[in-house]
Image (cartoon, rainbow, N blue to C red; front, side, top):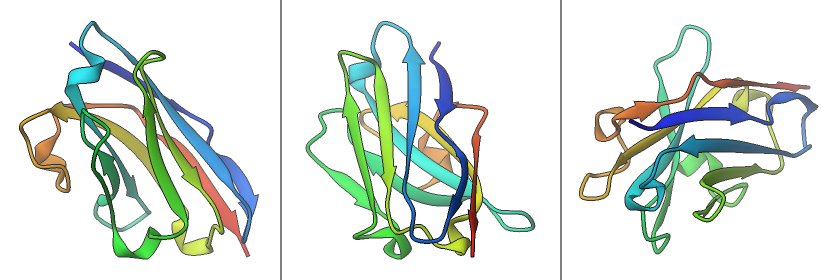
Length: 124
């Protein structure tokens, strides 16, 4: 079983940056696709970004393209989300998730393990 713990959230002004981290336990981290999702109050959980197990392909929701970058360090069993040019509409609880390598990566149903989330608040 994979355990995921997010960190790096906080309060930042619009235009600022944050880097979220998701640390994983388990023997086979490098064999999983990894994704980031977010959920704002009163809204459904939304796909944000994903990276395949090989690191060869990344995916982003249109609203964050050019501002967010997902990456992974398999030696550290960690996935990152670098968030630049933050906007108030980015305010949400951010979750990382792990899915099997053969799965798709843009839907919550593609993932089998989830972290507890970290809060990101962007003030205007």
